[in-house]
Length: 239
Image 1 (tube, helix red, strand yellow):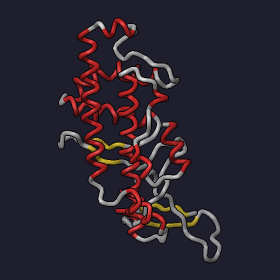
Image 2 (cartoon, rainbow, N blue to C red; image 1 turned 90 degrees about the vertical axis):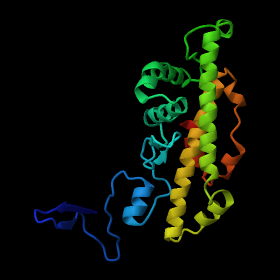
Image 3 (cartoon, helix red, strand yellow; image 1 turned 45 degrees about the vertical axis):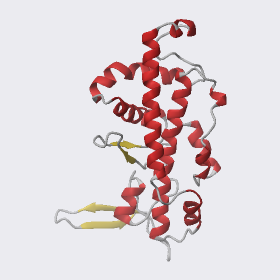
Image 4 (cartoon, rainbow, N blue to C red; image 1 turned 90 degrees about the horizontal axis):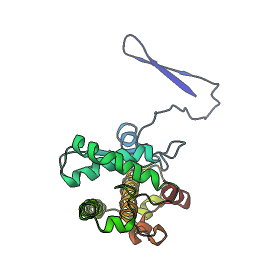
């Protein structure tokens, strides 16, 4: 119900866009900002900081090699695929250009092919028998699986580094008093949710590379410690 503009002298003019009733709050959009930005600049955070398409405005700075930082965020594949590729490439110790030229098209086709539940061979349309008999292809698959294993370990280490998690985080979120402690807990939740999201991605891609039945993929037990509601759980599963 407000709009603002910056004047030539650098001052800010704020005007109402509708009639404001007595005791009604003033409301002004902050734009699509993550909880870290909202908390730092405005002193609050949002529980479900999502866009209509399910993409999150929150992001998490992640680095596997300690040098290259990737801003991870959750959401549909259009928002997450490129991020996943960038953190996966760090486990190979390759440059972004070389990795994407050699692997991105195959990985993208692989993930696209599994969107409808069908398994697609990332290395071509070879049968299971042909792949098993091809030493070079087996080595490529083993290399991919080893990279996923390293990435999985790195994600878990980052999750373990949080001093506030599980039941402790859940208890802090119960006190919805608008305090900095509560808003800080929302920020921690959004970061852990992001890490769990990519942990599940790693698990699923590993299963598909090994041609395992996805119905046997079990969610990590510690995922149950993430204090999210059923709607958010369904959203993560869908993504």
